[in-house]
Length: 584
Image 1 (tube, rainbow, N blue to C red):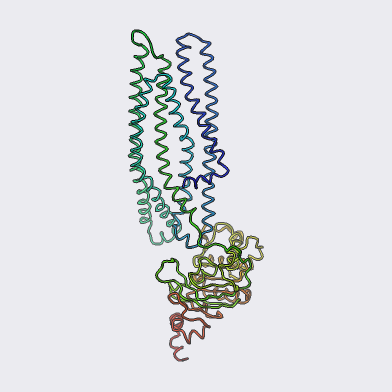
Image 2: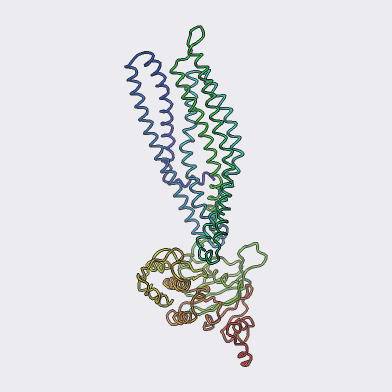
């Protein structure tokens, strides 16, 4: 897992490699200065040599400058490589998510993906930078300080060693009990992000139903869960500081007591100098603070393990849909053939969503699709642009199995206006060019005329340069639908799928849109899913769906005559029961 994450250092590997070297240089300089200070006291001050003091001062300044430069180099390379790792991870995840099929996306919640792209990556970035800063520096400080301590006084250095062993056992014991809390805490961020996302995206509904207090309560609960989890972890970590301070002060007292006796000596023979005692006291702080740094490394690594696992889950997710080895790169026409197709969202499902669909649609036909809620109308059309793969049977477009096409080529020839219309932040023209980035302004205007969107666009102060806010929040539902239809038409597709995409449009505008389709794009196969009979009755043929099966397929007149479901829907919407009975 760690190896996979570090792979995304990419071009920043060399910076990550030299950062520890800078840290070692800085740590070595910090350890040399106490030696100079001890010599300064012993040979300069007690020896009364100003020449030695001046020379030692110059050496200390040079070492301090070199240490400063090493520290600056370490900080720069650490920040650069950490930010680079975060950037590459986010890009890799985002690019990989774009390859997901709908079934892959169903494995992750939207809030979960947002958390992985933001909080989890930031957590890994911070942990990585801390590792570069401390993983070499802390052990380096401890080892160098311990070596220097034994060089100056093995007797006093044993005090450090005993304190180090005792503190290490305590720290690693506390870290073991803290790990599980840090592993759980980042999973709580999903619930927090989900609360924010739902509230912001549905703010109009929240206010319409006066549910602000409920949403605030839900957010506070999610935030409180994170707070409590962190508190439980921090209660254990916070014990380290007073224990560490107790150990430091105890060591200082022991060193001072034993060191004073060694300076005075037995029988007047000194075994330790005053300068050496000063150096030993400095090394005491360095050794114990190095141990504290190592304990913090374990905390950060523990916290980042959960984040790494969640990120690797996204990176390891393989798309269910892949291009064939030698894909077809041209769609001949808009003909569609369902050859005994069955489909299930879950391969282990007991019953498929679509059952033995056998249909043939000619290129250029206008096909209506109608049926009750849950009859699998949307599932049927989602297979055409290969948003999902069929479970059984074959689906052919232009006489070729959709699995044999390059997916990008297929989807450029099958424009879909989904049931939930989505616009992106940017101008109207930028939104229209989503289906065809190089579309001219005249092509966009023509598509808007066909979708009856030109009438409200031209009334806007900035016309086609009017800015659309995120999600199309500054246009009405009907305007949003018409812009989405125009966006689909700009691509000049061979197949156009309208998934209940005129539900927010009045019947007169709906009729004008359908008439424009018949007159202006007669060679494009049009599949129109609708709840209103009036939206599909003028189609060449109509598919009636019922519980994942085709209940009827024919013209409006044929279905009125032969299909009970269609007739019931027609009568309920038109009140034509009596008239039809008389006609029969």
